[in-house]
Image (cartoon, rainbow, N blue to C red; front, top):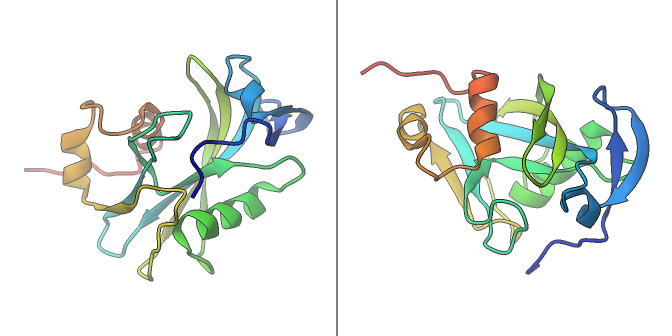
Length: 173
């Protein structure tokens, strides 16, 4: 099991349309240089409308211990976005053969980094086997998600993304 991220891992540096304009290490991209690098997010819903979230391990260099998008990972240098999505889903949750719907992309910026986030959704009722890359995960109902928003439970990126793309419908009491 990893205990830290590989700071020498090579990422593509892209423009706002996703065109590769260079490369940089994870350490450079996450170290405040604000180099725009692509990532993939897969929101995994079950057929009842619950959303699977992963718990980020304490050893992660960004947002340790927070609940986050089911699958999230960097696109490796030389890798296509679709290939990265399938690789990350297999590596993190052990799921393969799913149908992914592209939901758009946007630039996310924090104090340490800038990411071009490529967002996808799928409905999956098959087995999910979180790997050692995660501290587990579970399905959350829309009600559970909305009651935990703004409480420091989720990553800021997850909270902004579900609002921006209206991924988790509001519920009525």
